[in-house]
Amino acid sequence: MLQGESEQAPQKTNGRVQRAWNQVVSRRSAKRQDYVYNQEKEVFAKLPDKRSREYIYQLLEKVKFPLKDIDGIIEKRAGMVDFTCTTRQTAEKLADVLSTRKEVTFARVRDPEYTDIKFHWVPADFPDERIREVLQRHYGEIRYSRILKDRRGKADGRRFYNVQTEKLKQKPIPATVRMNGRTFLVEYQSQPRQCFLCKEFGHIREECPNYSPIQNESIIDEIMQETERERSTSNGQQQSHETTANSR
Image 1 (tube, rainbow, N blue to C red):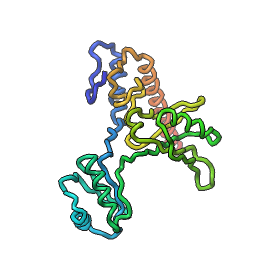
Image 2: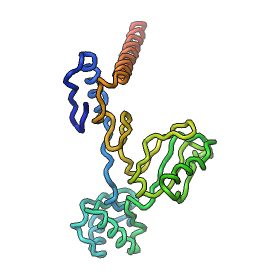
Image 3: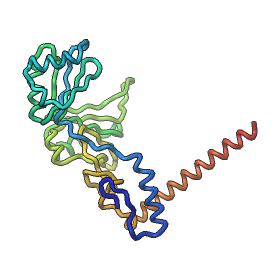
Image 4: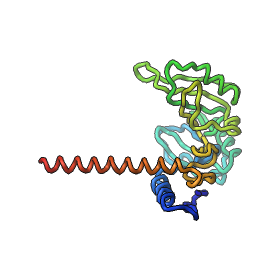
């Protein structure tokens, strides 16, 4: 089984399972998701557009914020600057002191008290009250919600719900949820990884410690069938190109 970064096949397997396991490792490892890092130590601030990096250090001196409490500074477009602090407490302190300066438009910690939950694939006629009801039951007050529309005023399937960050940490929302027979994709900042095999949080299916190809023959069959379909499609396209080339 896969455990963490290890990618070793089970010891006692037949040749068919061994080959399928090798396909799992080779075909899935390239698509492995990155770890979701904690952003609670980051501060993003809006500073004057035309300013040098030395200006940022001078600003930190003016607010008497020690450089030892900052791990990094990233300058972005339109005056946006990201500060990575050493702890959550120092990040909150930096946001507070920067907010006192007139030249700073705003300064906020990236892990706020409330988080926007983004739902995808929501039909236009799906009752918004249903989603709010489920979220409120598990995560408390919803400060606001939005139904996004395209430039022609049509709902594009995305909706935002602003809920308490602390409760999200205690009980994360899965990447997909079902309501009234519909499946929705869910995204939000610092969302933990979830395994689609065992449904547990903290790892993805390629690293699942509960996964064994011997116990999941149906999954092995599906992988091998998918590989065969891809091979057939590839051969068909190649023959088509050769036929076209010969006709010319």
